Amino acid sequence: MAEYILRAENIKKSFGGVEALRGVNLEVGRGEIHCLAGENGCGKSTLIKIISGFYEASEGTIEIQGRRFSKLNPSEAIALGVQVIYQDFSLFPNLTVMENLALNRELSAKRTLVHYSRMRQTATEAMGKINFKADLDERVENLSIAEKQLIAICRALLYDARLIIMDEPTTALTKKEVRSLFVIIKKLQSQGIAILFVSHKLDEVFEISEGFTILRNGMNVAAGRTSELDDKQFAYYMTGRNFVEGSFTPASVSAEPVLQVSALTQQGTYQDISFALYGGEILGITGLLGSGREELVQTLFGIGRSDSGSIAVNGKVVTMRKVGDAIALGIGYVPADRLTEGLFLPQSIGRNMIVSGLRRLSNAAGFLYRDRISREIETWTAEMSIAAADYEREVKTLSGGNQQKVVLARWLANDLKLLILNGPTVGVDIGAKYDIYGLLRNLAFKGLSIIVISDDLPELLACCNRIVVMRDGRMVRELQASETTESQLDEIATGII
Picture 1 (cartoon, one colour):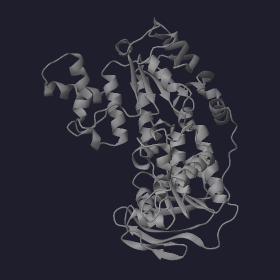
Picture 2 (cartoon, rainbow, N blue to C red; picture 1 turned 45 degrees about the vertical axis):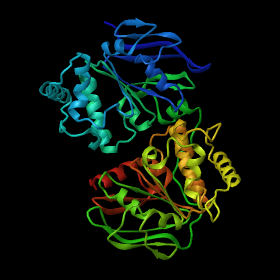
Picture 3 (tube, rainbow, N blue to C red; picture 1 turned 180 degrees about the vertical axis):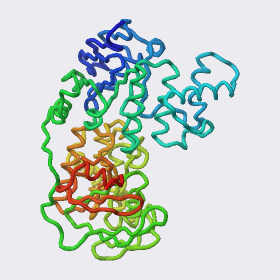
């Protein structure tokens, strides 16, 4: 019996002369939870596709359950117990839970007639493997991200999975959902299943994994036991850079508040919310799912409406009936889901940058000033250090960090008074995360007011000078970031204190 469930040796892969992998090695023990880490573009996805048989390596060998391959196809990988759960889960949103779980088994058996009682039995069996309960007749599109992920896990277990590869599994999950997922992962491990956990989130890597492999520029830079690694080493191995930790302290703040929220209430979501935000400050807002934080900031941007209370911008009480009212007041909003809410993915990088300033960049007849648009795009591409050789490329071709910079550039090109960011570094790697932190600090130093909504507590402590904690629709505490710890924030958000 082999000691390792997976051994990848000297894996090389080129695309059109570009080396994506340059002799990568990876070993995952039986029943081990192993982290594969690295910044976007380091070769993680390419390596996963080679292990699962989707790509053929230019050189090197893959050994799975003691069997060695120089070429591997997807069917062979599945037969050997390899299952990959990608970020999009590869589910059919228009089909039911039952159909998503049982359809592949029906197809692989080459059945010509659908037998619903058999499919229901298959789906029930799959969910029972991790004690997951869901309405089998519910369409998958109506489920939460966490529920979709559990369905993908259940489906993988139907094929006698011995190695489950999870590609950035916590990107869109709340902290509570992440904890629930980790319980499931530990349960799978207790059944002898190995997990290759692909992530760049330091706290999660240290919490869940036993071993790690870090890639940079298509090569191994470090591997070993997670217990022998610390945060600074991990960040350095991933990026080749040393980062300075510390909380944000404003250089100066305005004499009068830029934003004043007084007794703001939206029945059923939040109530009696009051706070002031001054120019040069970064205010963090946190709370568990359902705390009201999302609805509150959507009200500030004109997406939702309050039932009572008031919002004042620069001392003047305003009414925001729609998003256009907020934009006219100098308020920008970066949503949590940039892919569906923040970007026009088929459109170019440049068009995504200038879309919120079209009125400013056109004449009274509506004709665009092409030269001004080109200059603005070039200016902000350089200002934000967006890694793109051609701003006519589709924005969907960029990494998560560069996509987020495009959304930020869109708003910063306007005359902003207040920038609201909902989960500003969701799905971006460590290097891009610290770049965004530095950008926010510099904007605040120049006098911009910023609100950051996040359940990433280390992020709030690093970015903000003040933090508001919400629970059950109410603002329960306001704290100075420099005098607060992550555990205190967590205990206040969950109601322990």
